[in-house]
Length: 85
Image (cartoon, rainbow, N blue to C red; front, side, top):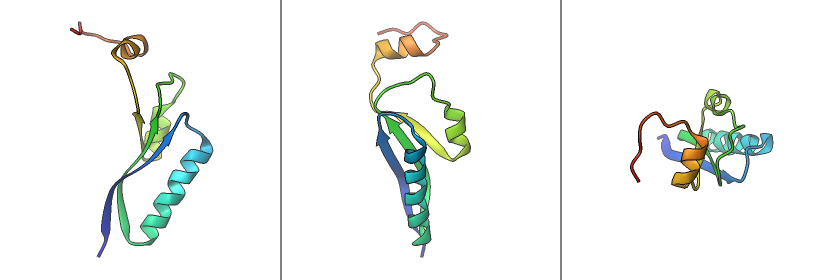
């Protein structure tokens, strides 16, 4: 019987090729032992505008932010609507 793991997540300060490789190796080991992985994630400690999240999505990896302030959101993301604090 196949067992399901909801998420495997790598927590890091930045995305590196070694981090992606580590996440993939963990996933392969689990899948080789009859586990089904629903999502793979990398959770960063902060936002970095140079990250190409589309490249991660193509590898089946979701990007998460460990901490983001309202001010950081305003500085880093285009807001099309008026947001009330």
